Image (cartoon, rainbow, N blue to C red; front, side, top):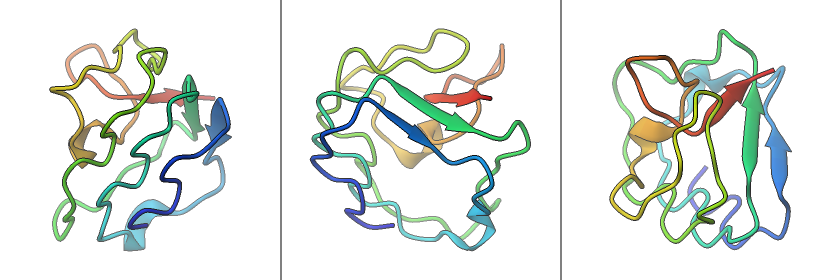
Length: 97
């Protein structure tokens, strides 16, 4: 998904029904998405446990991007590790829908 949604012009995106098990490269996937506020996914959404590469997945996103448990986008939280459903102990930018 390298650069797939880079500089997107939408506020929400819905990954419900999308199988993330084969994702490997998330470099700049959402970089520059200055309007994005919400990323929805199934509650079972999970990236593979290993083999993921790509820094800056959320580089220069909107400060309005907030995960389901209140994780707000920050410039020091741009790694692909935030591309998951939020739990109380694990901050992230996805919201279970």
